[in-house]
Image 1 (tube, rainbow, N blue to C red):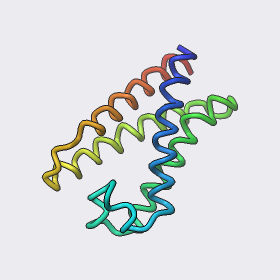
Image 2 (image 1 turned 90 degrees about the horizontal axis):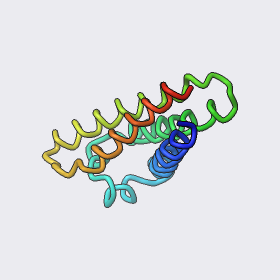
Image 3 (image 1 turned 45 degrees about the horizontal axis):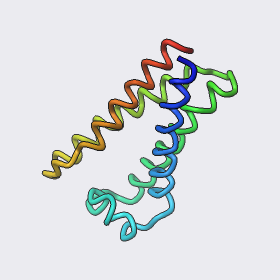
Length: 120
């Protein structure tokens, strides 16, 4: 379970670290080609979502790696499950039916929750 957790959590953390960093540093115009939902979302909210993603990525990796409050990894993975449910709702509310990536990320985050609860 140790190796499986690190593979799943590492990939999930890399994805969210990248996506969150983009939301933090890029302008609305730079984000629009990748994320159509930012056109109707205040940039403060976009930046906050990016910060949550970066912190969640750190939460998946740092607590188990250091042994300090490893339960935070479970909370971070569960937070990504909630985030993807909300993201899917946003896409569907905008009549954007392309939610396959959200489904994959939701499933991977759920696996990370399961692996973290069985391992930690």
